[in-house]
Image: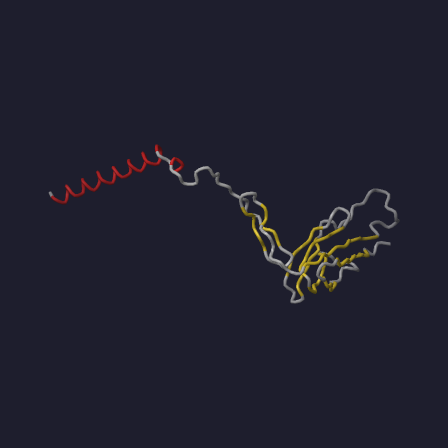
Length: 171
């Protein structure tokens, strides 16, 4: 009989704790206390920005701007990818889009480690900031003449320009 009374008391106590927790949660929320009073919770997206040195930074509150990249020696890489001829008789009779616009500029360290990809504009241009150093530049999914990897050197506070001319072989 003593065990039965202890079991009943335990069950009643557990039910009381659940009821008290429910009442406290619904009628006295934490916002009524001075926790974070006067401040709104700010949540930033989990996007990341690649820095020129290959590291990444995320967004920070309250404005959700990207955190600053680590200081380093930065230069600029820019250029243009052109391809031609696009039809047997130039100029083409219909407006023919550059089929290499969907490709990416692939930049690798000299060790072969991928650093990042840069998109091409509709006109085939690209521009990006990058840490000073020597890199290998390629155009993704390219198997025409002119698609060979190129070694480039980026110097601090200078712009390196490289143009890629692709010969399709169409005659």
